[in-house]
Length: 402
Image 1 (cartoon, helix red, strand yellow):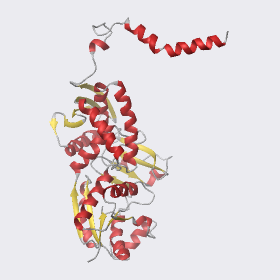
Image 2 (image 1 turned 180 degrees about the vertical axis):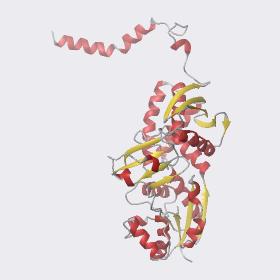
Image 3 (image 1 turned 180 degrees about the horizontal axis):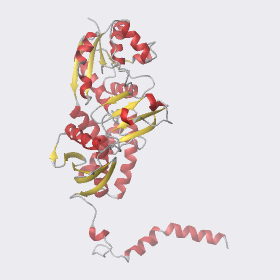
């Protein structure tokens, strides 16, 4: 019986090349697996394409709800942003894809998993660390680290030599990754950091701020224990909620980021990310956190956010540390339940009020009017004790100059 390999299949140029290349170099049966995280029409016609280019079986797995519920929302609750900007849309999708590849490999009795990530990118790390964590016995095949193909032109020629029509759009050759959470763009003019992106040609999910409506739009989001559950009073599933916010935020020009980031493999790369709904959710949840979390907890959560982002970006999702950080995040969010209203206007997100039964804001304490819980006289003793080290240091300096 021929051995089997499970391929992470998108139907793009690289994975189209991989199917015949695997058959020629490994003599394995190729099982193509497309994991649907919200790519939309990109999944249409892929089964026929995979089978016609040599795959023996094709799987299409709809994991949109699982993606948002188990990967996006934990990242949102952690407040994780890589290098303060990137909301990790591609990073957190890869571990889920790898998980589904492992499940199919076990079901089919495959000996290997293959992916089309390049040797220059982060995705090879994200795929392979997850596979090692979940199925260490499986072989991993990474063609970009093995074959002689060096460019898109080489890949096109490889297919044409075998009578296969390449699926390449020459008029729109940005490198893109799309899912329900975001859309990333790389390549063309973006490879020159000194050049402004051609947003009118680039953007797919969002208006530019200039073309957004001239009238502000309000949106209200309700959270339960840090998880968003309602938009404008409507209960929605995780995937439907994100899709709804993508529409609202996208038309208002919200969530466009241009970043020159440090890849985990050591080089810098430039990308433009569209994360319209996600940007709203991050802002809304932070508003609620400011209301419900005490100072020390919020400060430590800021530290956790940075570390969580690093782990997600570098593919360390299936690790004890990431799981422990998520446990901390879940614990502190037991009280982040409430409603947040935001005003959207030409790319801006403006707070418009928040309410929570767990709010730590006390008007009688915060007001300039003296209340029963606070005496202005108490401040003097607090300041004396808090400032004692400064006073002692100053006295020491005075004694040295006498």
